[in-house]
Length: 299
Image (cartoon, rainbow, N blue to C red; front, side):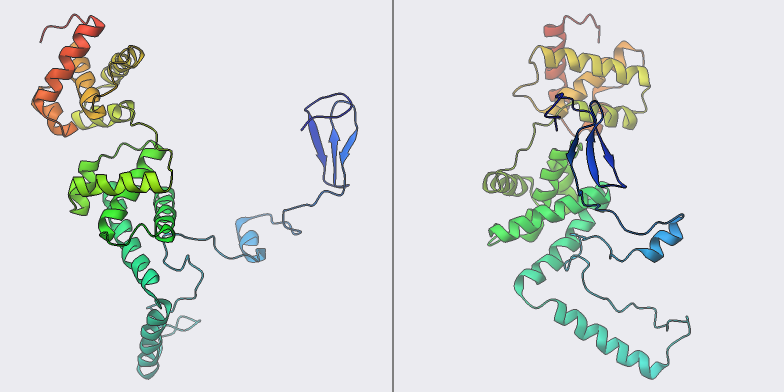
């Protein structure tokens, strides 16, 4: 926002009067501003929790987004005392029918299965909560668009997780996801391309830099080797040597060259096993990098 008088962009709010004032000339730009925060104050976490009148945030990983009340499995009353066996049987029936009533159509049934599978795959990949929530939101968009018809739930879930990992710059490959989800890599790739086209997702190209730290950690190399591998990769990116080549192979070759140059030599087989590529790929990428960058390394 810009002041119409002095064209300054420095503004300050007066919460007492509800005004937006130019800090340079003092002109009142807006008045009667609405305060969007709570009308109460809290001095510690306990007060904040007791005075808040809003519920928990929406959770897309939950089939009902966390908007329903659930009957827990503890069989205890509000004071912590154990409930009588006769009442436990009644609670069991209530839980059973509540669960049946919450899944009333095919879409809700599909979400219940898909989100459970998504949570399993994400847990094996070590993905954090925010990534899981983004994946669940994207899957719900696929359901709304009708992209799940005629396709395996597991393949759509895997494709969605792969797309979100690409968007957030998380180094997870199709091979890893395919092994965990027990779905052919080609099927996941086909579904991924369909999702990106139909939903018009802007997925960035995979950057080989994302894999450097991962390979270095797995091979137990030093920070000096990691820095050297990053330098080699930066030079390759500037010269356009990455286009048309798999990012895993280029990153693996950079780590291999760096390990030799710093004296922490690792064999091509060791690097290939960690990177999930073949030794032939590493040799080919190594020769290309050595020739284009003029590296003087004897291997």
